[in-house]
Image 1: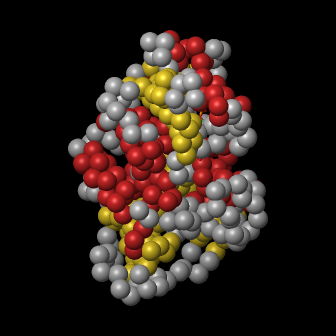
Image 2: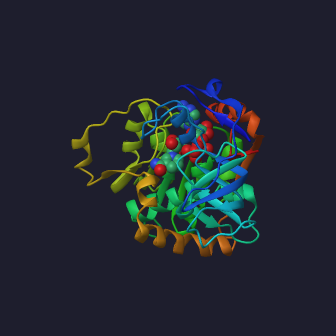
Length: 323
Ligand code: NDP
């Protein structure tokens, strides 16, 4: 089978198209013929050896995908060959076939395309856990979403609006901001504009935002802290700038503010949290109130091009790879 393999840390240049034996499912595993893979910023960090967990090479990137069940291993009862499913594994999806634990597999709802299904798990579950579980968002609160036209950003706008929040969306071009407005963002601002802190304060009756989804980090982190309202919660979700941020924790005291980390991975093995998230998300998907924004599509062999595309901040929604 065709697969993209990585032998050392690096950027798009280390993604090699190779031919590998088709894997077979072990006990409790499902073999899936991959139809669409969601490309996450985390894949870029993982390949570069800069992710939250250590990368062991050689490896095949790709953590979320959709496809058709080809075969199941011993003890798997819930899935049959031919069924259309989505999966969220640690890696291995940049290939024609992938093997995952049956616990990482979910059926794809009728009417959802493979590309939409592959664009769903990481972004929507993260947006939910960030806003509901970690920030405990309340209706009418203001949330600021950075990189709002990207994969997590577009999902976050939809989830925030479904929760009754008011959204300030930040992105780097007018085209991206137009997409954010089409998804329901109440205020859209270019992240390149001068006096961004003042602009955010002006848009929120001078108070600042109650919740801020911080995904860029670096030097801008200090500005994010200044955008917070009294009792505001800053969620550290990513660091797309790949630069260190600095903060003065005592500065949080005056406004009774907090800074909270958000990482999807530990939530995935918490059945109570996953049940709550699924109970919230599935009716919204079924009713069409939330719908993944599928961005540009690339062939699997163009994985390096797709990486470079996301790194150069050109994408809107989730970039998809198709074997
Ligand atoms: P996106 O589709 O949002 O693409 C990344 C976006 O980040 C770019 O389009 C760009 O938007 C913005 N950006 C700002 N600075 C940079 C930079 N220096 N280089 C590249 N991009 C930059 O990606 P994802 O939705 O996959 O991820 C968004 C962020 O959320 C990442 O930091 C990711 O690691 C994090 N994340 C965290 C999760 C968790 O569990 N904690 C789960 C999912 C994502 P613009 O041009 O508009 O500024």
